[in-house]
Image 1 (tube, one colour):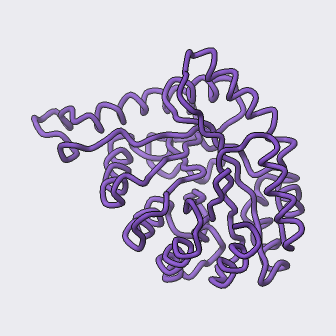
Image 2: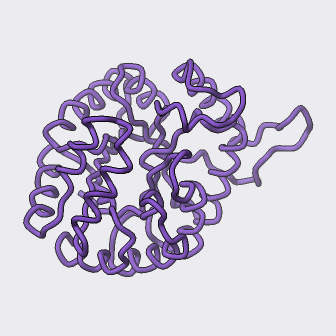
Length: 283
């Protein structure tokens, strides 16, 4: 199982200048991947901007979103953003998509929080057209340079349609921020959908978990604040945050046991020294 680390882009009132430094230090520490968390209506840094900054600050580490809220974006604009990030990173980007559910994240006129499943299915068709160089905007020009690849996609969600979408379009599944015993069933559903679709290539099964080591109390308060609009779920996520070496090792073992191919450990503070603290424990 590969172990990555999140970027602190959705820690409340994060210092944005931390993000490139965080990316560089995480790459030096030996993590496999840098991850982002995505919301619009929260005082953080946009996940697309964060991924672009990380791409420019690093040269080898993988980049992943877990998850980006695809339906809040106009499809062709998002396709171009993602193609550009993947291009400048040298093909290191994997996009984890979700459909979202918090109404305040849907700020673009005409793209409200209704019909999200149908919308993302239509958007996925648009992404493929865009990435394969078909003309854009009714003219003759494509929107991407020649040689642009289709960005690999992961899909989150718990509805049957989410697993079917993953099996049709994706390279794997990304789970929510819940304990491994909750995730195990979702991984089984993802495997079953993959097999039913006749997919034979290796499937990525990505898990995420939260941690804070330098200031656990602040970290726990931050992650609870981020999820507070979700009611009792905020209590679950904050209570499950790893704040000691023992808890982190237990978390890693629990996700290894259910067959995760990747575990992204998301920070709940922007304390740069937590990168090396974490690396000493889990790498």
